[in-house]
Image: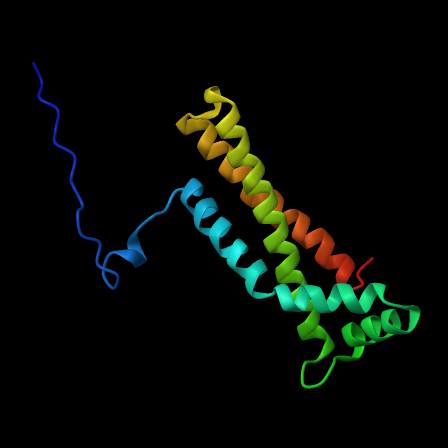
Length: 143
């Protein structure tokens, strides 16, 4: 009869020594990035409202909107505004896809397995980045 080895227990994770070597699974990254994307969308809500107001008020304000993204506004150059918009695009896409993943796991009890968690987390990460790259290419005028 063989005795199973006791697995190591890690009770205290030290930020300086343990976190750089800690390997977080894909589902953990999705969970953390879901929170980050939600905070990012909340913090940038004034920017979102400014963009929406400027883009739908009138033809003149829409021209100002386009000019802001091409030439910049105030101290912020146009490329910086595009990067902020790109971060919002990623935040929305990641938050939406991760939210659908969570809803699917809530509805389908068969989806609550380690294999599904890993697969769906990987799909969430890859699809949000790929869609962000496609929309970012459009934002920066590559097509």
